[in-house]
Length: 630
Image 1 (cartoon, one colour):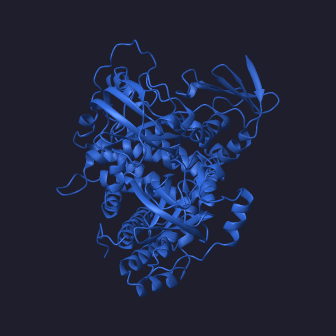
Image 2 (cartoon, helix red, strand yellow):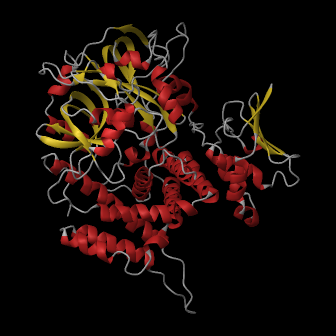
Image 3 (spheres, rainbow, N blue to C red):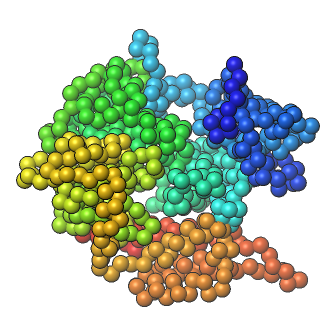
């Protein structure tokens, strides 16, 4: 049955990265120049669906078809166009560049794909009578093989594609450059470089979101993705060295390995919305076992903010646990035959059995032990972790709301007293489909509110957290507080959720936030690291020419030296020179800029900025520096 709808209501099926790259690379030079314009035109054309086929009306007489029987377009032949130039037309490559990037599967490892499918997928199989799954092979053995010429060449190609993104910037990184990055990502995956391949796909997703003016796009997040991509590729294209980075960890694995975890008694803590830079969305429900160890139950799949906003109401498909993620966050599970990944994610294989059980309040064991861990130890643990969404990055503490804080470019920030420090609280995610910003406005309008919270650390020059969940503080004196724990990304606070105060309505809360916002609290000797970070972000946004203007960084360089950040000043100077220096040939003509040198200078500056921010964050929380910044 065929249904005709508007272009924005029919989603295009995901297209495999190698398909997009193949179609774009096959275009003639003349058609390559028209690729971005053709993609923009197709985005506005009406679409229709007929089973596994999506049709786009290119014009009154021409139809473009995408056939995805497995949910994704896996071959170039599955994209068919009815125009006279087909199959060499621009329409096939344009629609491939417009469609989402399909999640890659390790086709060269069928034994892994057959057995790990259930364990690595949050939903897992639903057949309770199916035989138990075989143990999941550990693909880390494949990833730990010695690096060969193919891997070094693949890492070099991916580095060059990433350097081309820096050279062109977001505005210049059109469909053709994205296709080159996807081609390098596909070659890297075939060579066993799974982590850099995933980072390349995340970079393409970020570039597309930026060019489409997606409200969820954040330049800082895209900068972090590009930095990690270049950092990993730069290390992998060189031979392993004693004392150097672990190449096996840099290469990654095709699938997350799971090992038997036995029987577990889990107690729910909170639900954390996920909007990943890789184009995945969903929810992670955090639980704690009887020994105080944290475990995660994820439900993450390709999607956007709409999926993240509704994921908490989805059923936890783990054994016979007939409860949603929201219900599990306030309840518990009894699991037998559990499978656990190294980062404590629970697998949902066929041999796993689980039933719903009672939970415990946050002030009772074993949950209460999480809040008894000294705050300085939690901060040090969060700074040491390399994974931003891991259990090690969670902070469990109590705080008292002081009121809203006015920050340029950062709405809905509040100040709170925590362990003798003034901490700024920012939304965990600013997307309007999630409840974080709404709830922070509500909380900021109630000074004196005491909260027991679960948060994530934000590396900054001042104490800063992002709240995930909040609840009442046990044993406190009468005063403002919450009646029960709430997940701040999903539950929109109402008057009935608070005790000891009359919570203003939405309009009054917003007005109070706008009128009573206090200036940013003073902080001692704030280091002007933003002078360096804004240059690296400007380079990614506008390309190398944005930093090539004569004298454009002189003032920033002087301010950095005056603040004692001589290394930052030197890195900024090298970044500017790498962007501006263009040699001439024997006839006096300008040669192209050295993309290799510029990429290395950009990577050094941005990586230094990250390490310096972590060191300043540790100092702001009165902790020993986790890394020495020269």
